[in-house]
Image (tube, rainbow, N blue to C red; front, side, top):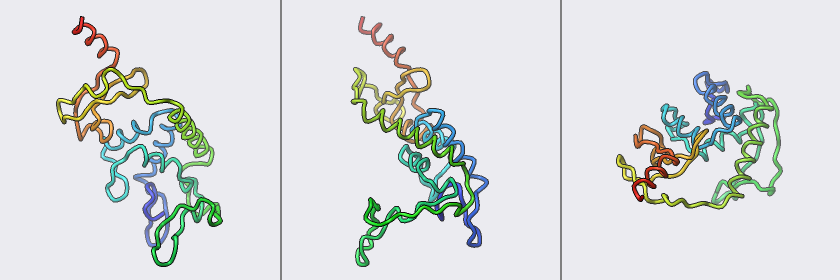
Length: 195
């Protein structure tokens, strides 16, 4: 728990961090409501909310937060182990050693029902991403950001397919202020230009 976002250790005591715990609850709520992990990460970066050690957020870090049972006040022990006493390489425990579930080890930020809903959402995301083949558009690789020079990528907001600068998608508006283009507008303008 030493470096777990949402918690703090003061005088050896683990407690909820009043500044970051609301962000944890917000991330769980937004993910459960169906918002994409990338969109959540981009928003947190845009609001200058940093992870421990001043790290930036991305979809992998959001997924790790949502997957961490410690936010329920419980701890799954021995998720990883050191491979041997010489190398001491941290290795995921995929059944080589027993795992132990310790309940009530510290104060919870979210309840277990919320955690269970988030796990269902992560499974939905995994199913949809593994079942969908990557679709290339006629615009893929052809739109270049005038601000930073990176290519635009197709994403989806709540209502439309849109094209955004890759830097903006990954790191937020503080990195690049390149504008968003709705795909239906892009198609219409392209058709007009090409006749």
